[in-house]
Length: 226
Image 1 (cartoon, rainbow, N blue to C red):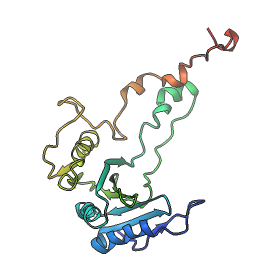
Image 2 (image 1 turned 90 degrees about the vertical axis):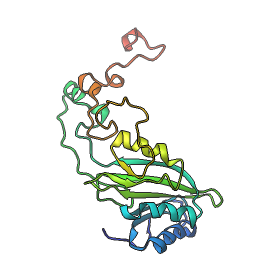
Image 3 (image 1 turned 45 degrees about the vertical axis):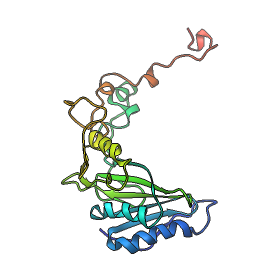
Image 4 (image 1 turned 60 degrees about the vertical axis):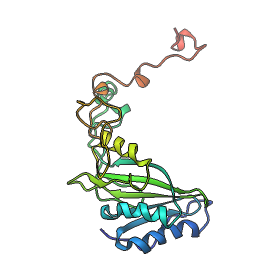
């Protein structure tokens, strides 16, 4: 991985040219984690993203909490960057056949701001309630193990977020006190929020919002009303 020591600044229209407060968060993480910071992306006046290595994931959360004032845990989730082999849910093969649209090959995998090198990434948001500023931390989940260090020792709220990530995406969190399912039956197989998990209902019937269009109230019969 290549570490970008300087912040990648995106000057959005109407935004200030610099953002010392958010820049200080990036600088603080770089100062403590060194090569553990892979890349960063800052939109002045709006938000900041910092991508760290898997080995630095737990330390990044601790630095934000203990040194940078970001003590409020907002959420932790997973991004699956794999383009769905089934296409968009509203463009199922059934709809394509009905409309005479040829199926398209999946697009290549691309990553969002601050980049990435793996299919799955964790993203977590921490917030400083005193200075009213937050930071988005991202990390590449190792493709060979799909295992990350738990944040439950840092933030109690991470417990069920990690359980959800485990259940829905198959990401394991080493050190989690009770990594068990939240929503699905115990014998359920597969990970429903992965892009390659087939939504069977969409495979066997068209998208109702496209083909079963109801007439608006007051529309005449010759315009599609009943």
